[in-house]
Length: 187
Image 1 (cartoon, rainbow, N blue to C red):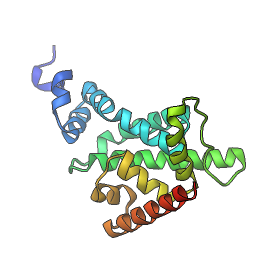
Image 2: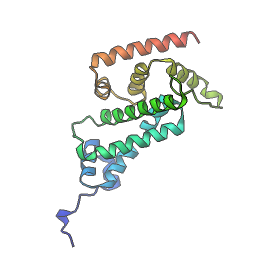
Image 3: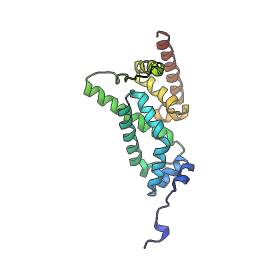
Image 4: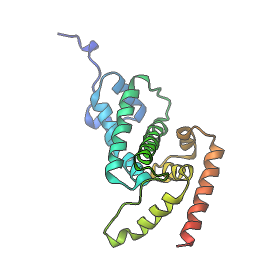
């Protein structure tokens, strides 16, 4: 029978919910599957929402989110706990969105993002209009809006996720908001 000191420290579900993301990644690296599951539960809704806003295609959003979490699982052994987990996760998610968009453009033979999905509810009319405006933005403009508002990343986190200076994030955000305002005013 193995001694207790050789067994990985397992995080109870309630305990996992109270620990920060870096601590959960460290526990996952030590072999604690519950810690990784807690990370997925904590961020799944936002990652799927981000991918859904990127494509407006629910099934594709779930596939992209799943791929992003698989990438996260693969990164567990090498992840550096430096307090930038959300930026790291959204960089993985954004990269998966970009790969899916390139693949979709290649498969469809078109040079634009996925078409805006159909929704039946009348109360979603404004959301559809915003989504349509988002799809008219450049990829860089759409990415910064999604990271900042749907991903909930700060300017610093978005900067890290995109690998650009904070000033570039602010400039892109300003340009994206101006473009949305212009598109919205033409509506």
